[in-house]
Image (cartoon, rainbow, N blue to C red; front, side, top):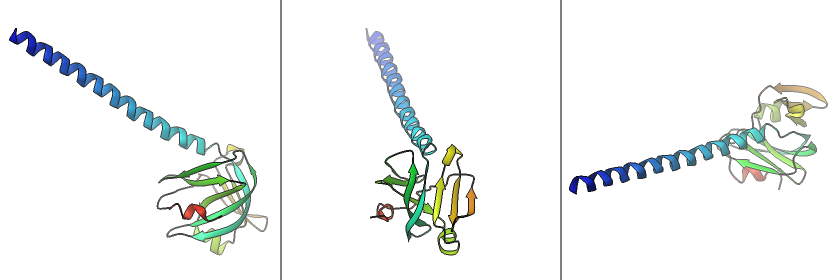
Length: 149
């Protein structure tokens, strides 16, 4: 009987360990899918409009864009990879200090035609096109995201 009890305990322990591994794997798989879905949603967002305000943070400028067009009514994300807020016809996003200070951009297009590009204009003239969407949120705070308020 003693060997049978040890075998049952060992078998029970293996089953509990197996179930724990399955649960943890499913949990982390769901988290990764959630992150991937969030980032794929980012690449579907399209907007364009006039820059109406800006605020310098430690590394970047936050720009406030009065939207002429957007394909989404509201969106908010603030994490290491994405800092973007769209609400009530305005968008808050990051831009380089060169674009704001030197190039004096006044209009922006983001991902129009789902091309993955950001285009910055000054006085109706295209200043620069970035082939990749840079909407980085690293180091931004809630306060930074409220530049339009």
